[in-house]
Length: 235
Image (cartoon, one colour):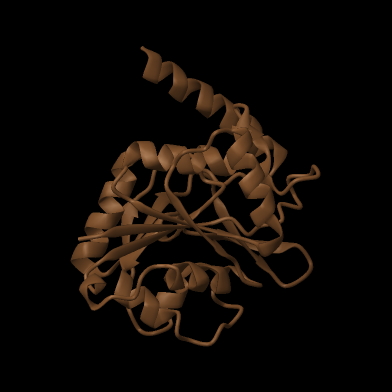
């Protein structure tokens, strides 16, 4: 059974600041995107990686691969105008073969470099059993719902809610069928696309280190996490 992972790197990273989009900013001396791909490959080198990049960044990626001697086997394809269309292009880059009907495919944010091997294994295992799996973690802070536009709010039971991570993993045939739909703005992630065709999505426990790098503060945390993981590997 083949296992694919589509890594989506289409964000402009406006909240991160800087000249380059966040996926190309340096983490531990290497572009974030490379750190993510290299760590994924180190966790599981049987994954068939598909990288989705905006057209205007394809040349930059080639330059960075030469500069940093990037050696992870990756199929690169062009992204679309939205995340939905970028994922769809990533799926189109996977060979269309009837023998792949039982294959699994994950979709992962390029700016999440710290997913764990446990989460990878459990997400693919759950998707194999039930068709669709999403890593989630419990909320640690209290949660309130804003009422109206005057600042009023009310408590919301946080045990009913979870924070969603990636990779979100699906049977390849299921995700392809889901992405045949017309795009709507309510599609915030792949799970929402799959649910729109009436399919259930099952949860696996995520890992709290698997943060999405969005702001300069996130990069500070990421550098600390990277240093800690490097020290653990050396000891």
